[in-house]
Image 1 (cartoon, helix red, strand yellow):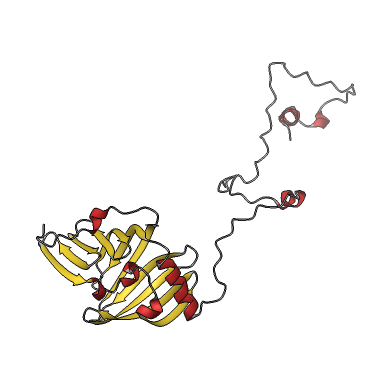
Image 2 (image 1 turned 30 degrees about the vertical axis):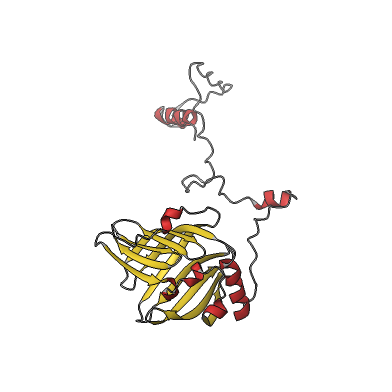
Length: 265
């Protein structure tokens, strides 16, 4: 009921019962015109759809079905990933794939993460120049470095002022150092497997210091890069090294491969 009707009803009730008044039929009086100063109260606006619901980014909001149906423009297709073999590689195919990779670059540098047998984690830079030159440069607080100069491999500890020398042929990393690598000829391939984009090749090297080392090479088929190697030495201790940010185009500084045979700094 409007406020005007309610006021009229209240006025009628206040004047008493209708039977107590003489019957006087007159034309119905017209209601007085509203004062021009009185303003109509506006109705509240319509409730916006989705009021109180979480806001959704317009870019991530789903497209209404009607809009999708109204357009005939084809949707852009995502960029195709580099192809990789749909079926697992056989042992000869896997060996050939890794041989082609190792023999396809003369220099390599990048970053590495190493996990020792006791669980400790080390990080640093790796530099390789084939044949025979390599350097593992560990980040502080590690004071050790590993250098191969083409003839020997030196393991140096700058804090302890010690240096141990080995022949390159005694190290299990010949796949990085040989001028021409043939995994089947230079080692024994014991297994091949593929999981997703990662090809794993297991080899054994019987010429390493102390006996046979078991090595697993994990190779990314899509990126065509070596991702990790895991070495189990003759004593059974396991060390894993993961690689990233690899660059096979830039030539490392030759100072990285110098061994000081006279003294340890």
